[in-house]
Length: 262
Ligand SMILES: NC(=O)c1ccc[n+]([C@@H]2O[C@H](COP(=O)([O-])OP(=O)(O)OC[C@H]3O[C@@H](n4cnc5c(N)ncnc54)[C@H](O)[C@@H]3O)[C@@H](O)[C@H]2O)c1
View (tube, protein in one colour):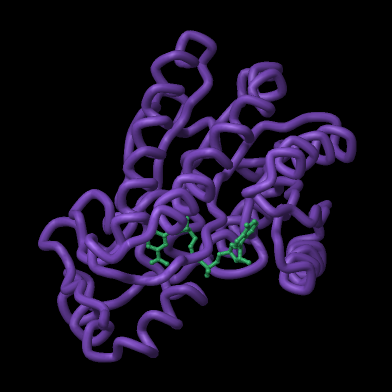
């Protein structure tokens, strides 16, 4: 029996990058997956890939995670379509640029909190009753070494992702008596977002790969996905409130992070 047979997962931002990799790894272990994604073409492609490659049931729900109504509807769709919800992965993110701390705007900072904190907060509140039903509930939130190590020129990202880690630990503490596990992954992977940053900052990207203890940047499906499967499965039933750095050891030494800014 596969590790996630019979389980139902919602993965936000599963149209590409790490979300797609996590969705694929879940499908490989038998889960039904709801792909909640703002980019319709990308979301539909992921759904077709999950069905064709692993023969699982998968559903696309066009979702903008900055819109509360759509986030609540995303959970409703999962339950209506599959009759249950076991795993919620808050992964979606869209970058809002780099700037020195003193040049970052209110809009950028608020945007970061909307994407990272409010979206996960709404989704977790809405999903809770379903996550409690079968003793299999799991929340996995994607955060970042950028916040943990305070990398430069992305205060809107760093602060929001660290707030999300705190939110996750608080939920983990409050919901632990119900055996509901909430954990964080801080990944390092060759997603579309990573490739964009690397292309416009080639020196930094070369330094990041060379400075990574394992000498490479991870693969969304085969490096990040299996850890998400572990956190989603019964294997991690006594693990909650943790942050797993799935980054080839980058967090041990830090990475060279200095994107170009004006
Ligand atoms: N790639 C890395 O190395 C890395 C490092 C640290 C943290 N992370 C975190 O991992 C997560 C995934 O990042 P990624 O690198 O795969 O990014 P990505 O840009 O490659 O993929 C993000 C996905 O989210 C979707 N999305 C964007 N805005 C959305 C919205 N409003 N509603 C719904 N979907 C939306 C995009 O369309 C895309 O499919 C993020 O939370 C990011 O902060 C990634």
